[in-house]
Length: 507
Ligand code: NAD
Image (cartoon, rainbow, N blue to C red):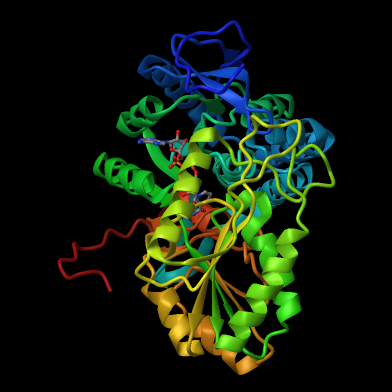
């Protein structure tokens, strides 16, 4: 069956919602879920109505008093079991990701492992929630602070990491004592639903974790429900800004992570072979559909640029592209026909804008998978900052080379860009690297590391229009995001002595 943006009911399996510990089949309105490698509709996903979202928030609200009062150690034990179940069912989860997203099995496994690392971090919640205590802040007065859960929190996630990005959110939110409603991407909803079943199997009480599938209607219902206290969003900048503005104006705490245009700077002293090898994976892995993908290489000096372009070209010719289930492939298809068309339009535009298309992947056909959403790797040289292919996020297998005059010039390009998610520098010069790390206006920086996705003990987030809000995702920032700080100042008057009223400010 060809891929369509179907909204009618089809006689196919429909991915439902997960409310109060059970799947809820709600298919008044459905969308098609396609296998991007074949272009065939494999199942449908139900789109939650406002009433269904209300039911999910009610389930989460009802579960909150019990879960919020459960000892952190007991909450951690559920997460320990969840981690074990994720490992036991790795093959099933990875297969679902590849089937609906299209990325290779290896890549899907990498995503799952990075998600599990956040679960492992969340298992340390008794330590992470330890407050601060100060005896004798005044005569006979002690003070301490403690972190308390917000209540019901929601997560809204993109298609590109269907298992990992939700795991940036719910393991820590749950560990902190919140209850959760997840709205995964409608393009690949099966992996998160599978994980919801594993949470229940791990002993998570019903209603603590819920899923509403669907689109804008479900998102708006979450943003308008006064019982939702916090919202974590990851997706494109336009929607991130919308979610942030609407959520905060409705009194919610919101963190909204948006799009990116990540630059790699290659210095004249860099090991170019090493840099190119790293760049190929960082630019074309997952078909460039990563918010940390490198999409621009700023080469310092003409010689560096010539060497990089020539080696990139050679490396691209050796890439294997095809079905993500074939382990010899380096790159699978894009997620949808609509997205492939959007990326193609950018390639056409780059040519019109005058950039030099050194490698053109538009004509790629994968034998036997002619209806799949494949696009070969593309490489543009001589890209200029005024071009739209430089300014806008393409989110596909397209790398733009910009020729910079100096390190300062390359850094200025990065700093002037509206996005500030990730960046990296390739160099052998410690001083240049230190200067770069210190002065670059970007949230996550690599030195000879092309994808500087922070380990789970740190936090993930960008600057500028890559993040709306004050908290990064996962790591210590997530503990702060998902909790209220409460500071208690306490005194137990002794000896029955009644003191006079004090009108001066206590000091
Ligand atoms: P998207 O913004 O289209 O969708 C994200 C979520 O928002 C989905 O759940 C979707 O259903 C919902 N949504 C879409 N349109 C909406 C609307 N008008 N109103 C309310 N909700 C809406 O993003 P995507 O295409 O799924 O994912 C790709 C984008 O995500 C890229 O821009 C990428 O850079 C970004 N991303 C960012 C990060 C990060 O950490 N900064 C990580 C992963 C992906």
